[in-house]
Image 1: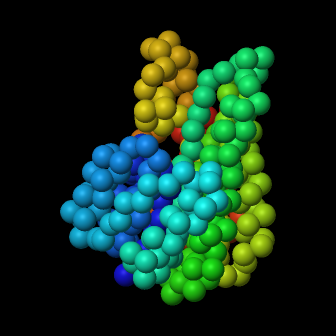
Image 2: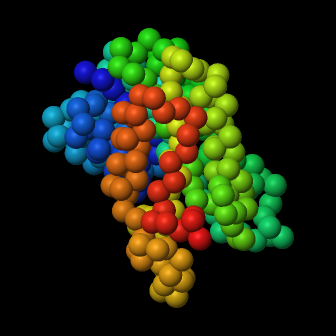
Length: 242
């Protein structure tokens, strides 16, 4: 049975991706950093869909923890076919108030985490019988920037470049792509004021925020698109074209 590792999959987009992989017949490693109970709930959903699941707590910004995450995934399933680097953190702080430590922390999780997991998984992916792939979850902010989260936007831009670099490095053995969501209904957007949400919707031609399952659909497409590598699929309801 093919197997997938989805980092940061205890909630939101990661949860939707893990669930989509299970629906498509994949065993899934559910990764979390702080939300063990939520990760266990995702694993139950995977099992209810008829697939195997394992839950692994790991801070992907730590290279040793990332290597352990990959090793435990492979031990649980006997192989590893696909990696989705979804783990990420955000913080709304103006540049003047942003400390170097906070900037580094966001970059460590969002960029170094993807690098650490991918590097640890590469040998196993090259051994995969299925057409192996890595998908990085970037953001529309990689292209637009952001006034009060420059470190988050910078990290997501770096993921686009990392995607292209790894696609070149790993071809033809492993495909590497990215998906860049726009505004999506998750915990990270739920705390915005009504005015902020209205202003955001007005910038989206489709007139609404996306759903996590719609981002999971894009990840599934990139997983199955066997002649696509080094690309970033923008999923934002048309916002970026404006």
